[in-house]
Image 1 (tube, helix red, strand yellow):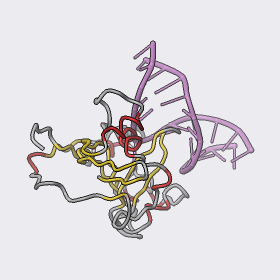
Image 2: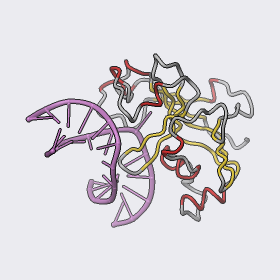
Image 3: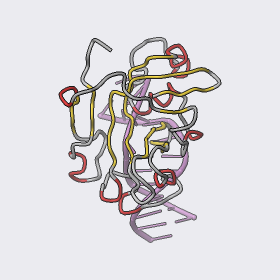
Image 4: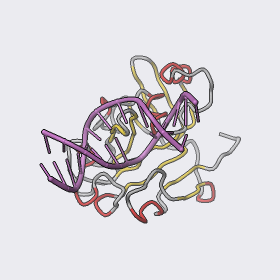
Length: 170
DNA sequence: TTCATGATTGAC
DNA sequence: TCAATCATGAAA
């Protein structure tokens, strides 16, 4: 994940994601075809950003994945900081290298992602995602239920959270 | 128009 | 364990 702003460039390796699979997913904002102002960008083609405010104070960054008829997205839940770490510290008001980008709200603050990024085309601009630095096998990815889903029945246990297992290398 | 709540975080 | 804080969605 890369974000280039006037303040500088921040980048990081995406290490945790969750899938939200559209109108049949009770935990998805577009469940049953809901189409409010908030989810407008989820109805864009794949490759656009869906950024929304949660709990009145934290931004969450998603990548829209399908097409205008299938409002689905992937939530970026955590990254491993690579470039612009000083800038991340500054934005997060932290001095400690811990907890910099290990949460969906935290990484948005560290990367300067907010409402102005909602609906952006990730394929041609200052906010984009590059290919992984190397191939990642299935054995390196842990799959679990999604975090923080409390009012969507068994959808909380659907295997839609993906974590890159820790490695001391890269 | 009113009201409860959430794809979270950080402080006790 | 609990408050911060506001757009959304459902109820009225």
